[in-house]
Length: 352
Image (cartoon, rainbow, N blue to C red):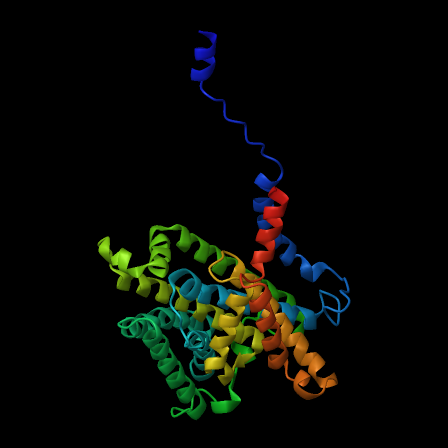
């Protein structure tokens, strides 16, 4: 009788120990934006990384560019990493935000608020129209269609048939029409906080979208679009939704980019700009919640830093893109999961 009771007694599952790892990660993720926002107050010199204190205008300018490009990389990963759409024309929508801001401020009297409104409207309408056309095809045909529209935008900007884009020289923003807190070297702090706010909002919106029902469908489309179609859903509508959201956020990033760079420049419309976004996403870790963010920060910093060091180097080493390309190949060979795979390995070893 005793043996039977022992055999039939329900097993008591071992209680899971909840150590500091259960709450440490959310606390760290919540604290990082606060720490980043406090950087301008830190009069600290970081040897080898920056040429001046963290709160100096030059360093804040670099940090601002890093935040903006990381935000753009997050929007691109929404297409490529989570929906499986390889676009070669994503830079078109960044340029749309930049040039719309410059054109409205230069050629109209609508002011900065009017420029923001026009960027918001065109940031929705243009990708809705172009996405509806490009998404009629899939795979490499979709990539080529986005490349074609991107090249058309580049030709329009460079040739400037309407005399509004400034051609190859770009378009400088009229500072007298900008909000005073965003103008001048002394306001580098404010522009940094604006770029940081863009990154935080972009990341939060993308994470929220991925956690929603359309976000789950986007992942399913990436994994097996035929299965989504068999389940009675329309992949086309969901892909268009992802395309519009990603492009709209990229246009807003283009607006902030114009404020930091002081205008719009034609390089953003080139295919190499979008290829740089692809490298950022793969560098950080495609399809990972914060992989593109890390990749964008690292790539932009290295591109800037190597550009400074190229004046003291000779041969191929004087080209930042060459060094970045070699580092990218090495990373793909030895760390195919991107930088975030290092974090996963560390967590798995720590859990063991």
